[in-house]
Image (cartoon, rainbow, N blue to C red; front, side):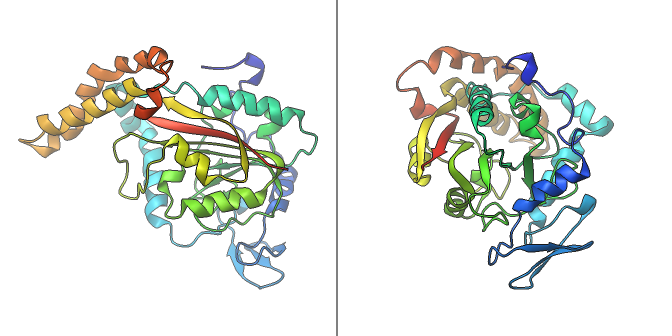
Length: 317
């Protein structure tokens, strides 16, 4: 579901950024311990108030997190597994995605329009950016992507500008952002309440918040911590005016994913090494089921079997 061609950005977001633009984005960084001003040094950032130092890694990317080795390794393995001949072979045998997202691209197109109307031109924070822009993020205009700060748990991804734990105090100045975007992030965090508090603190009045989270989906990695309903998100992010909230994918996606995982377990009981191939086989059988969500999400009760939910909200003045 792509928007108008004028909004589609086929080149990586980092390509049009100059070193001067990157440094300008880093002016929003602050010490996560005391929110003090940071002095930029060749190998670190040092707080002018508490003197705490934060190292700079690849491409000068500052690292504000503690031990995120498990999440970093998983993120890097996922990306590295997608590259090279093994990744290409895996993609050939992997069925199309079992989920049908009917909300994210539409909401980001709306967010793009709202940000374009704002005169403040503050940065946008993309939490859990990954190694490259998603198709949905490419809905944003180049002018907005150029002022987007990409946060993740590893500095090895070229897209990343900032390494931090989104479930702890953010190294970002208060009221310094025009928007926060977080797709499929909240359920990885030990303290989602802290995420909500930091979003309220850093998004300037009149700014925006967009996030998606799974609701009825199989567990991902071992550090997959939570699931959320649409109503749960609405209550978590008090202090924001809820503009839209609801399912991004519905009952058909839940059925396809559940049956794929269930039958993969059943058919691999004699030999658990068959789980991966069995999962791919059943995925090929069930992936078309997701298109029923185009009809099912029109039902007023479809939200009770949502596969994932979203929230689009505005910071109250």
